[in-house]
Image 1 (tube, helix red, strand yellow):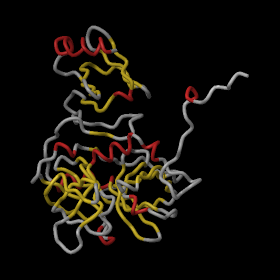
Image 2 (image 1 turned 45 degrees about the horizontal axis):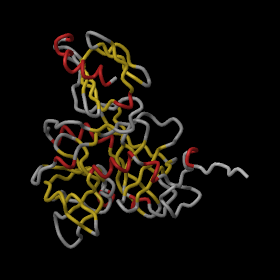
Image 3 (image 1 turned 120 degrees about the vertical axis):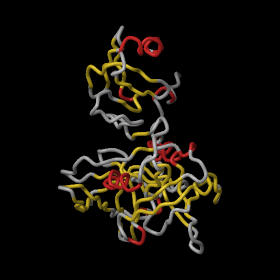
Image 4 (image 1 turned 135 degrees about the vertical axis):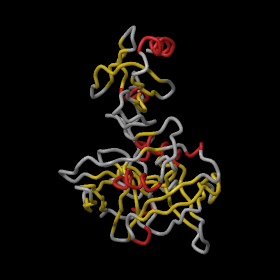
Length: 312
């Protein structure tokens, strides 16, 4: 496979032509014509040979043709979340809000409410740990676009998948029967942010759902209680917790989780790089119903590490 990728990089542009599709991998790209899309792989003609690329290695697809949407990250089957691999152009906030509004939700429980956002079409979403801490009766309100208007739908079969109370993150899953496919966000790169760069948040401050606030990145490395946060002038209030902080390309760069209550324009967000790490290692943070007081589920060790019987 490695040899084929090198050859594709060297020869693909000459053999395929300008109308080729591009399959973005974690540390490389393959240019060619997509011949078939299977549940676990893509078959790509690179001109001199045909490659079968596992879905697990693909981070995005850029398709050719006048009607194709070219983007830095496209969710594909088998991929838990979409992440941008390169800088995307800035757009107007008003158009981004229309595009992203369905992916932002309200998370409710008997003790209060917060916000959240979908990672994929299968109903997995991120919110803050403190939004669902100590609660088991959780519901999620989603706004579906139907016939040019937004219809509110409440889902009550919500399962806690993983929690990390140290970074204030929780992964939930909607398990209602008959639930549709959900609109999801793309995760960006908080490391590439610049101080002064424009950002905006969508959430439910004080229960006022679908509220949009805009500001800038005040600093990227504000240390609070041993953790580094993005500080933003974007207005953050109770109810925004767990919601997305977007850059002007419409990519999530942080998860809003707190503010300084005796000041204005002093909001904070968890950098999206920590969110990616949490998601990539979600099995280590799996919520255990056997012991709901701990965020960790201790898995059985691999069989090769188990002690072999001692011969007498």
